Length: 249
Image (tube, rainbow, N blue to C red):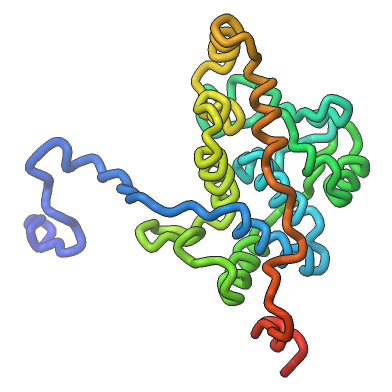
C-alpha cells in the first residue's frame, strides 16, 4: 500500500487540470431581503430579553445605518457627534473600506431613541459604545419572530446559503428599503461603504448637481421610518398565539 497511491482511499485522485488544484469558491444564489418591519419584530424581542441592552443597541444601529456587525461593535464614543448627528466609520470589510474613514449621518429617529442615547452618554471618549461579545441572542430573536409568524425564515436564513444571516439581515433590509424608495445609488453606496471612492463621488455630485452627497445621505436616513415598538395591530377581540403562550394558556 505504501508504494501504491491508488490504494489510498482517503486521498482523491490528482486533478487532470490545473484549475482542479484550487478549491471552487462558494456560489450564492439570489435571495429575498427582509423589510424594516421584520427587523422591528426582532428588535421588540431583544427589548424583552434581560441583560441585552447593548445587543439591542447594536441591532438598532445596524437597522438605521446598514453597518456590518463588526463595524457596529467597533464604534467608540468619540466616533459619534450628537451635535452634528454623525458617525465616523473607522473599520470595514474591504481593503479600501479599512483604509478610508467616512462620516455618515445618523437618522433623527435613532438619535432620539432613549436606549441609544443612554449607551452613548454612558461611554467615555475612547470606550466602545456597545459592549457585545456574542450575537447569539440576535439569532434567537429572529427565530422567535419567525415562530410568532411575523418573519418568514427565508429572509434571514435563505435555504440556498450555507449559513443563516441574522446579523447581515439588518444591512440587507436597509439596502432593500432605500432601493425601493429610489434613493440614488451613490448615496446608498456611500452610506454602507460600497463606493470605491466616496470623495470623488461627492465632488462630482457637487459640481454637476449642486447638492452634496452628505446632504442627500442625511435626507435618506431621516426618511427611514421609526422603530415600531408596538407591533402589528390585531382586530378587536383577537389574541395572538404568542400572547397565549406568554400567559401560560
